[in-house]
Image (tube, rainbow, N blue to C red):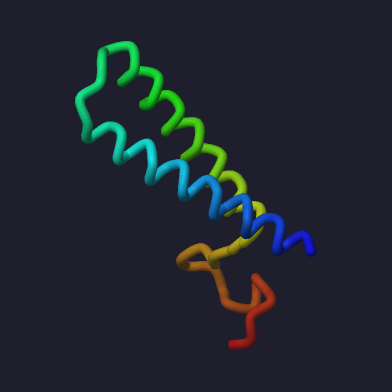
Length: 73
């Protein structure tokens, strides 16, 4: 269930990001543009954090032996 909830949140953040990017292509006052840019940055940050928490990935450092990370050689 948690994965489904996180995927729904990711989708919502992505939709908001697309909406804000579309808005930035329109004529906006300086105040409106700053607001949209700030919201876009907040949504992107939230999406990045949620994505990292939902899909954690670890990479083996270059030069490290493969068995140091539990991978078979």
